[in-house]
Length: 129
Image 1 (cartoon, one colour):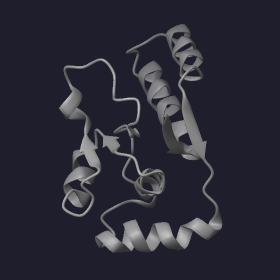
Image 2: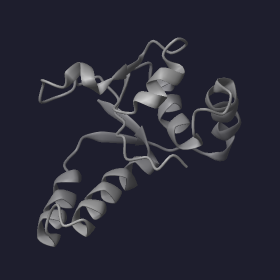
Image 3: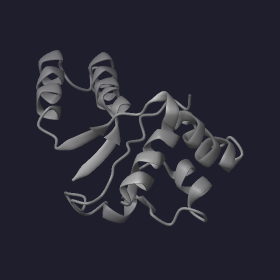
Image 4: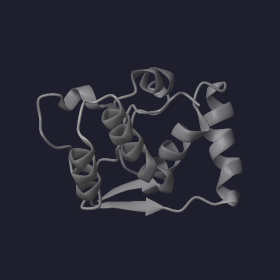
């Protein structure tokens, strides 16, 4: 099973919107992409205010503020679930790789169609905020 923080819902929506606005896909193709997203089997992990202190100290300040709170949410969920975390964000990977060996690069699977079923996921659609 794949787990992600609740804000994962907006990441692919943002990417689809950007592709429609840049005319890379049509509006109807964007609508179909969103329809297909609801078929993904990702369990959403509800983060709450009591998690913020731990997320902040473990991943944000713990990595000298080089990890965004947004990315820290993904790292927290993966750590809590004891699963690998797969990302296309090479900057994030370089920042945490020495301390978090369970964070892996999607480039390892560039030639494959699917990730391992037990893997977490993160795209590279972050705007760095």
